[in-house]
Image (tube, rainbow over all chains, first blue to last red; front, side, top):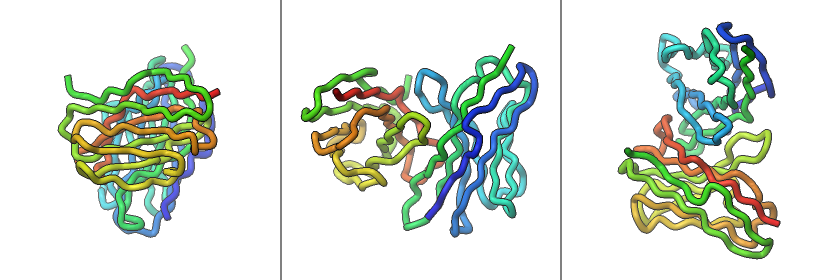
Length: 116
Length: 113
């Protein structure tokens, strides 16, 4: 079975500073994908970034980067130069072939508040 | 514009009534999904469909039913058998099952009293 753990229920950051949101995962499948979604107060989920288990380099998408440490089974999201609009819930998720399906498993989320 | 629509945004029902949540996509995606989200929780998969006329149970399918008669549509029925139906329901689609990038609708907040 696959599992995603996000231990930070809430995080606060000052505008323009960087923030790291933690995510650890567990799977026995050697091939898997890790990704992050943002959920603003409106409720819609917005895809941010993806990392494959065999990717050699950490994924980056604009101000978002994924700090992938395979040995530690962690896939932390780093947001650089935080903006007020970054205030939202952030969900880490994983997809693997566990059980023969490729259905994503989501963590419980971290609430990020950006202060001016 | 391509995307996923869910209607209505807010839905109120009395206990004991069945209710159907709408989900439509015009992205030409084969795979569609229904998730449930409770406060302080992540998304939990209810049902998913890989292709028309086919669907599979997710982790919490009890008390729910779905149909996939058209590629664009994947309605979810919350039956009276669902013990705690009040939640936020999200529909998503992807090109195929397993694609990491799913496209989500705006969600339907269901309140049952």
